[in-house]
Length: 201
Image 1 (cartoon, rainbow, N blue to C red):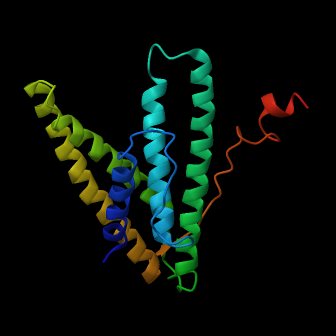
Image 2: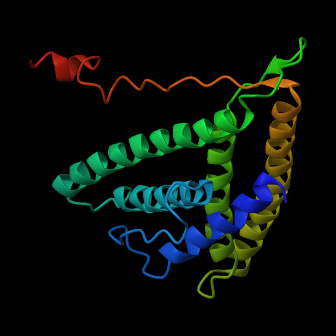
């Protein structure tokens, strides 16, 4: 089983579990053992799913401004949690492949494996919600047909992205690709690098 074949059902489970309540305040109940890659993948997609719905809510044109600011803070925290978890998943890959002998002509990829997996998690959400639109009984035939065409593209993208991720991991495992991880170092969350925050000290 490839890594994406392992990951995809975990993403689907996280999305389906969230939609049992469809509430952003629902606590996560991770079914996988703590410290495993499966648990990290589930948590990753759970964070993405909650944030997806945060983004829906904050676009309500009638939202109370105070509630919107509170929600913006939650979105900021969610983004930081997402970034931290991507780095955790990259650490898993780095540990897994750290003893691989890198070939002299090895190349480096434009993104790390975990950031590619991040895109796959988001894609799982897009597919879930586009399929919802296709199946809407209150929508017009034209709307459903348009969404079906978009869903077809997303499913094609799933195949292509999964293939690319698995190929990248195979290339790292064989030494053809060199895995290098950069910490994201987001400056606006850091009180030492955001001038609005350190300026008030």
